[in-house]
Image 1 (tube, rainbow, N blue to C red):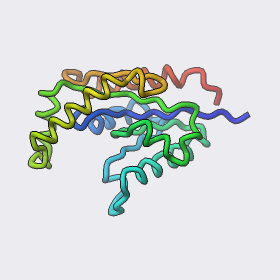
Image 2: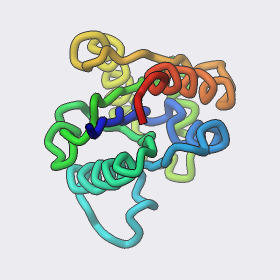
Image 3: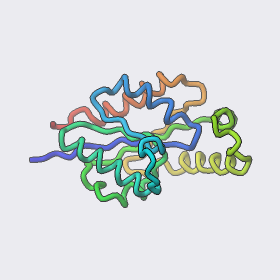
Length: 175
């Protein structure tokens, strides 16, 4: 009997620390494929977000057939993941929310190379999105989405918390 594996998605508003923690996760989870929704994974192609998610879930499903787990870092909503052709290939899709306070998020975003693009309206939109994730973590996500506060936690500590969640879910899966 073939067993399906869970897929893990580390999500959160921009500036919460998804890309930064991904580097730490690679060392803690060398037995997992680590993918990102960022543009740099797709080279010069101009895929829209839904096409990116579809590619990423196809890659994760291919890894799962070899009994290798996948962690995707990036802002993905459950309904976007559900639209992907490979969504049903997983036993469950487990989201993990990275969250920081508004002041920290704004400071991080305004210190990026593209800092001039972060207008007050964009910062406010990401603040509202971060609040939506917190408010809906238990109801819009199945299983309910845990939240890890990245405001003061160093990336290595955040990665350890993600790793603990992943390993807890992974433990006991017949391979």
